[in-house]
Amino acid sequence: MLDLALKSIMRSKTRSFLTTFGIVIGITAIVALGSVSEGLRIQISEALEMAAGLIYVYEESDQPLFLAMASSSLSEEKIQEIEDVGGIKESARFVMDIAYLDGDQQFGQPDLFINGVDPENEELLVTESAELDDGETLEGGDAYSATIGYSLAQDLDIGVGDTIELKEENFVIVGVYKKIGDPGLDNGVLIPIETALDLLDTEEYSGIIVYPEDLDDVEEITDYINENIEGVTALSTEDVAITISSVIDQIQIFTFGIAGISAIVGGLGVLNTMIMSIMERKREIGIMKAVGATNNCILQQILTESVIITFFGGLAGVILGSLGAYSLRFISSALESATVTPSLAIGSLIFAVLLGLLGGFYPAWKASKLDPIEAIRYE
Amino acid sequence: MSKTIIEVKDVKKVYNQGKPNELVVLKDIDMKVNREEMIGVFGPSGSGKSTLLHIIGCLDRPTSGKVYIEGKDVSGLTDDELALIRGQKIGFVFQQFNLIGSLTALENVEMPMRICNVEKRKAIKRAKKLLSSVGLGERINHLPSQLSGGEMQRVSLARALANEPDIILADEPTGNLDSKTGKEIINLMEELNKKGFTFVIITHDPLIAKCASRKLNIKDGKIWR
Image (cartoon, rainbow over all chains, first blue to last red):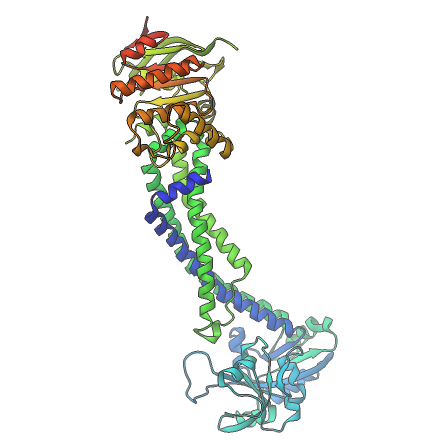
């Protein structure tokens, strides 16, 4: 009966188009907004995978994870206390600060991150799996050498041999990394830690990254630090993953909530259209029943129509939403990772079909219960 | 196969039973329809003849009494069970034609078959055959609005035949036609009756009275012989 359903839809083209359009808008919003949080999730899980086994230690704070990490400061004694914990293979203390390229602080994302790290342990901060695109690590350079992330290199169009000015000091770039996935590194400059302490005029460290001798001891060492060293918080990569994913979950609930509302409004449009449609077709439905259509048959017929509308609306929404997600890349580098995952696309389509079923059910049920004699007499 | 297709026993139809506006439409109707009959049902308007046709055609249920179709009691069946009987055993022809305006002649004839899950290819083939048997082979892709009254009634006859029903119920089939086209429709029904289709026809048309094999007169909800 698909052809009959299509025929009914095509009978009032404008109305069907507008109803479909309502669904298109809702699903487009879901896909486009969803792609942002999906992209964020992928990007972060990739970055964390690269950093597996690491333990981050920073100053204890009531603030949420990222703020706490950004504002953390640990004294030399604390750092040494942590370094002395048993079972640690390597560790890298670091300082971190944000900087703005034109000197003025602006609202929004900082332009770059300054990371001070021991040249010998640079790989702990950037993770073992990070690769240099060009040049070498800090180990080969002097106090005023720097390595930079790929985004920064691209944005400023600079490379090995060029200089970059940080807080009125010039640094020579000795290495450029390939994409790492952590915005703090991809948009970051790495410089030797002693220089960084001078540059930022501080004697305190932002934190320390610890790498255990045995990967199975990660939890144990994390717990040990948390319990025995006062004033610090230790987080394993896994803990970070859990915290981040709960943040992303919240973002996702919010974005899907907003987009979902517009889709539900679209669903109400379907309900409205189908009610009007069965009112107009009362007589026709009566005729179909007279020649043998069961209640179920009518129910299916009307539901098929509403699902066709929302399915194609959903399909168009997924396509437009994907285009939208793609064009987000050009708006801000923070949205660069926006990704329409298969589960987002399929989930949105299923949601659209569900809207069709929900929006179509009441009119379909009403139509199926029509008394054929009365319906045939209806003009 | 039994000779009787339809048997109606003590059928009563009352609207708004027990309320002040109670209306008794049919009282104690007893009748039988035999195979290959062509019964003309006559009576003034409001006599209850359309209600009787609806009850025989499983579109409506009696308030009391029994209706047997091919020996099977249908008075207690559900909506869907009645719908299946309508689809397979009964064909309807209405005074107002009741074709679906957005469907072509072919699609209108195809529809009852599609509802009964006949494969599309087969349904189209049979619909074409039926339309040419009622003399509309050339106009199968016309919409009802592009057809004359007589042509529309031919389409609805073809539609009534779609699922090879046991009986065709017609409610004033010539009521909306001029006498010439009415005569053509009557001839067509006579032809079909000779081929073995059973007809129950509600009518005022004296021409149908002439060719009916049996006549029933209904007045005030009762059959008068």
